Amino acid sequence: RVTETDARTDSRVEVTEKETAFKGYFQVDRYHLRHRKFDGGWTGVMSREIFERGHAAAVILYDPQRDRVALIEQFRPGAYAAGMEPWLIEVVAGIIEPGEAPEEVVRREAVEEAGCEVLDLHFIGRYLTTPGGSSESIHLYCGRFDSRGAGGIHGLDHEHEDIRVLPLTRQEALERLAAGQIG
Image 1 (cartoon, helix red, strand yellow):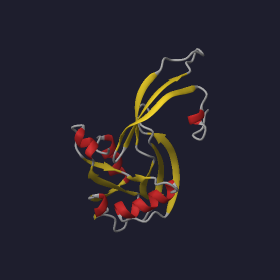
Image 2 (cartoon, rainbow, N blue to C red):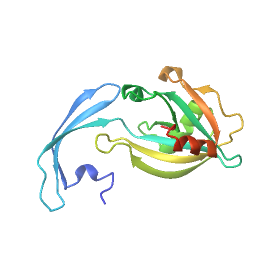
Image 3 (cartoon, rainbow, N blue to C red):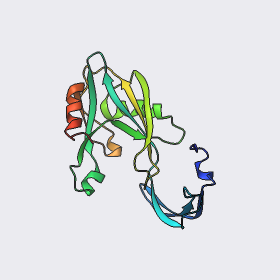
Image 4 (tube, rainbow, N blue to C red):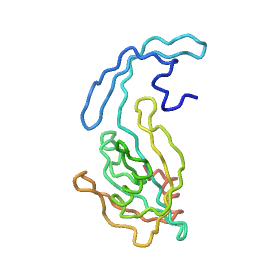
């Protein structure tokens, strides 16, 4: 397996050109590349736009003493643009800034978005959100917290956040997940 540190120098991939097609709140890079085929040959040169969003970290807030979770609900412009319900129920998450560890992100975001202090963290895994068109990966954790007093409206005004905390039993959360109500 090729690791993250050597993936961009992978001899199985040849980048013939790379350009930034758009740079705003996010960035889109256009790659012209080819890669080795399973039979040992090479593909033709293809052009692909890659959404460069950065990496993120997320935490499932769980109180094992009370068997409760805290989820958040907020407006998401991507869901709106897709013609879907734009107020999504999610886990706490945030973008990893340069020099910041994923664990720091989830602890900070738990306070900012949910008003909750994470007591312990358990790493669940890391995954790519949309590997066909985005470089974004998510580091996912389960964070132990005290659910007493969880709730309210949180978020940072300068980030235009208006986040409602939804304290639920684990069973209620699983039922909402099964019903497709958690994005």
